[in-house]
Amino acid sequence: MDKILDFIAGIGRTLLDMVRMAGQVTLFGLLAVSHLVRPPFYWRTFWGSLVEIGYFSLPVVALTALFSGGVIALQSYTGFAQYHAQSAIAGIVILAVTRELGPVLAGLMVAGRVGAAMSAEIGTMRVTNQIDALSTLSTNPIKYLVTPRLLAGTLALPFLVIIADILGVMGGFIVCVMKLNFVPQAYISATISSFKMMDVTVGLAKAAIFGFLIALMGCYHGYHSRGGAEGVGAATTAAVVAASILLLTFDYLLTDVFFSQ
Image 1 (cartoon, rainbow, N blue to C red):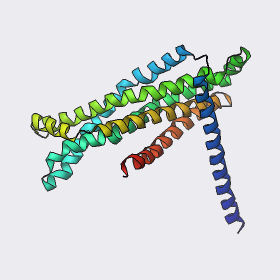
Image 2 (image 1 turned 180 degrees about the horizontal axis):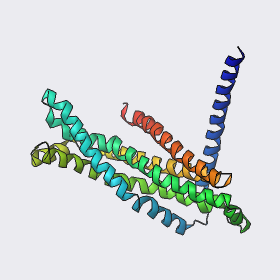
Image 3 (image 1 turned 30 degrees about the vertical axis):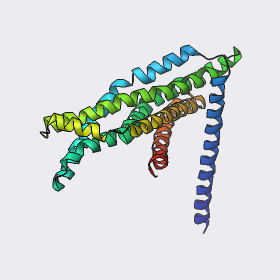
């Protein structure tokens, strides 16, 4: 009986910790966003973060999208060939890439690369007392370190998703034409007829939200890291895991909102 009670108490403590964490992250994010409308705004930090997130993440996102589009084409052909519905592959590729794989895969790649880097950078500043030094110099650490990164993440990820959408569709085209012997003109025509601006718009809206969440998790865990190098490592891991979980959770919620009608 005592073991059962201890187990239930442990679950309760875990739930309370999760609720407390959610509240802290929400307040942290709201505080950072509020500084967007209160000058000054640190443009140098913003542009540096924008280049780091958008430009330097481009190769990994591009390769992931290109090969993912090819994989979708191959898998679709394997299933659709049984029902002689190969003509639907072009529509499946563009639908899957623009609605889901573009924003989700780009978000996961950026979370692993940029979320970890943000957390490590800010966490190192925390454990070496550089954040305290900013406060001593009358510089708000959240305004200087967090707010520009949140805005950069929100703006950079939609740009990456546009590139991912184009390359994902191109990957499907290359596989279908070069490996599956599709007629190029017919494939392009089917792709154009299946294209819907709504799918792209929803994917870009997802990307903006994902970019904000990735930057928020990276900044939050780095800002609250403790315990020297070990604490920075733990904060980096927590930032990537939390960003990935939130990204997939919000992907489902947003998909349900936009496409459940």
